[in-house]
Image 1 (spheres, one colour):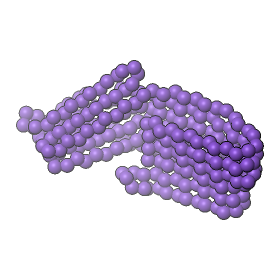
Image 2 (cartoon, helix red, strand yellow):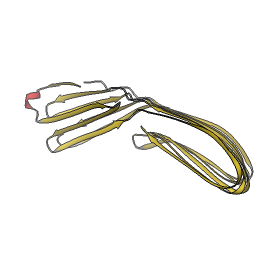
Image 3 (cartoon, helix red, strand yellow):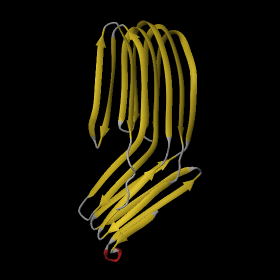
Length: 247
């Protein structure tokens, strides 16, 4: 941690920082109090390596459900199939590492500025293939990468679908300016999200995506199709942010 400032002796500011490394777990806490205002952050990262692959095929009913939420990378999916012939293949690779956190504090009179840079790389690569013919199937999947969200949904009696998502987080940056009156907080990310979808459905097909910046949706798209349609689409989203510099 680095602290710099001017007229520090006149500032009534309490800055507490705790960084711990226990069993490969990276954890830090920061608390800043100036006047009647307190700002806190508490985050933990656990290195993860998870791989899964397999194929299921048969004739009957089925329910399949997955969920992932790690370092801002998210996945949710649900498949419900009525009696019919179904084949599902999936390959999933999830990895996350915990590198040291860089924390700097700048004090000017009774104001404090905290800059935190997390280099906790996280990667999700997920590929699925689904083939179904029968009385009916509903399938949806949602991928999230911090401020990016991509979703696809299908209802059909005949469905052929292949999708791949590659979501990565390289860096997260927090900046907070704490004054006796208020707190101004900014979050930034260095991320990348690629999604490829190829599907043919005979009833309902839908996909949508959005990207947020500063709690506002800056990019949004949505498409819905009723009837027999074939869809091929590729979506790429990336976010970059410069590391804040001490003034």
